[in-house]
Length: 349
Image 1 (tube, rainbow, N blue to C red):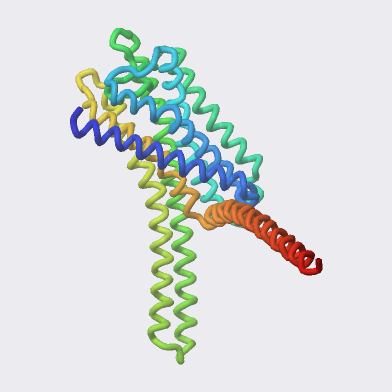
Image 2 (tube, rainbow, N blue to C red):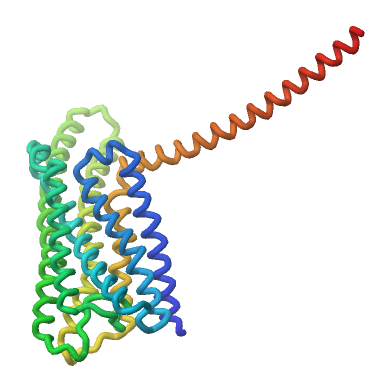
């Protein structure tokens, strides 16, 4: 075992731990907070976290075993199941991110009609489409026997056997699959978030003009205060740009290397390096670990929900502990009282 394999195994273990803990915290927030459940984006985030947990529990450990054993870690039937789940869950997560971007676009660009356009019923329909879209491609790959263990990725995934004569059909399927999942989701992300950024900058510019005019009227205000106000306006614009870059950049960084590699290997003369294939797969897995922080856990309502859960747990422990102390103290008081009564009786006698 060389250093590269040790690094890849350690990386997968870290991704598994972070992804499992972070996504479970998102589910806890959704379960315990009525405010989070009442919001439409909560449905998309719930679906995204559910898919990420399944990827973490099913696919990541199998890839880890594939790296360690350097061979198919399970039997054929279980490997086919893992291949189906890999295609289904990865597609579902991409479409969930696209649905979140559509929700933000409607909320920012059409704020007055958001409540009528993005109801819980409409969100449920979008999630249902994501499931049907993912199920269609995953079942097609299974029914056509284009699923197996791929040594290049150390994973059970969409894979064409060497003796399979339907290479042309497989090339068409792979191209259409990535065009309808990765390319479609990326187009929706770019279109919606760039529109959101455009509207956000427009509103920031209006606020800047009003702020400057107000500061010019307040002639008695200290120059340092004016400078801080203008600096705060600049930071607000930068935060909006930074968030959009994180949404789109994390999607491209995690999925693009894997998708490009899968399209490149369609050429018969190209052979994918094993370490690069596994690394590109790890980048896909890292999206499951980063999604809770990108979309939910760093937001104010999720922080509030987590603090509420922790305070509830700590409050119960403190209550239990204080109740135990009160019981012990009461027993001691009763014992002391009995001793005093007996002492008084002895003195009377």
